[in-house]
Image 1: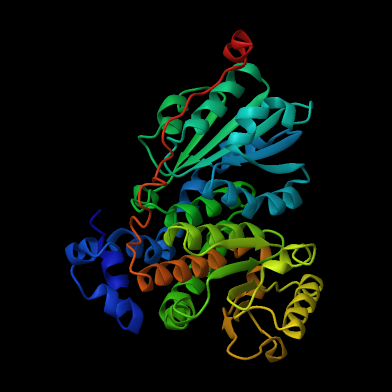
Image 2: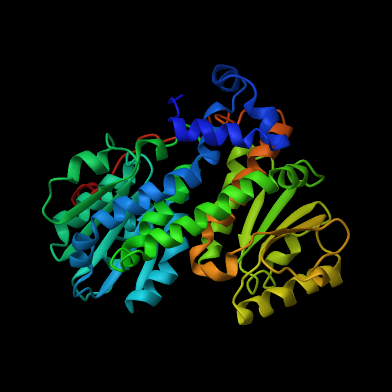
Length: 410
């Protein structure tokens, strides 16, 4: 396990005042590692301390980023697994701010579909987001587009300076590589700190050109995250240990990416024992609602925008009327008591409305991380490596089928 710097050590000491974290942090780092949660716990907890560094790295590239956005016809964000969900957390707001068509594509989708997925207009910008940069499709997608699409520009956001994305393309004239702090390159099986820092880096693509905007937003988010860890971990641990056998996550807009990531964290960290689903509030009525049975935990990320919230509250009231789910966890600010029934929990996060729904997916994701982490421990699993070898930290290598090799085999 990497040795924390003094600021992280001081923050961990402060977290020991919180009952749940105090119990987990009192053992030595070696003992925590032996218990199977040394990496994951640190990586969840140090997130708000690393966000300012990420913002600074993005701001330092503001001029180059502005150049890459100049004259674009479209932007596509790509990643695999959690990295795709990071793309989904920012694609809608980047489209709104730039006035461009912006899509989030899985790396595997682009590997198979190539330029057929994209409009013919050029130039375009392909933003590759990755923790390790070593997943087989990550480098293959960039390599393919560099070879076949000379009018497509590339931006790589990655946490690993030794990964293929960072090392193979950093000197290419059509590629900008933005490396994040090494401590964001999570050692745990699951992405936690890497996820939120990659989201903030992508979110900063436009904000970097507005002096102080990214830094101010990041500090507000970090303040809210520190408050969440200090004051809400006990409540989240209690919910995580509750009676449910599956979990459903609901959200709208940019926060839907956080819902997808939260669902994946619960699934991964519990070795598939807790089936999960993420849906939009308006989408869940169209069939998926049948999955919300009496043993389902329903996590509701509640919007601040009044129109969006009105639709979301209507759906929550419908769940109440139909008596669906074992329990609801509603995450938001100014949560109406009328939405709560039985043992439901309202998790208030002050400042969400001021930040705006498009900027808070990282906070929603931290809620999902904590739920998954505490459930994992309650189930007797090891958060650093809960899987029994079915999945791995980096997807194992597989054959890359090039168009010419595929045609030759036909």
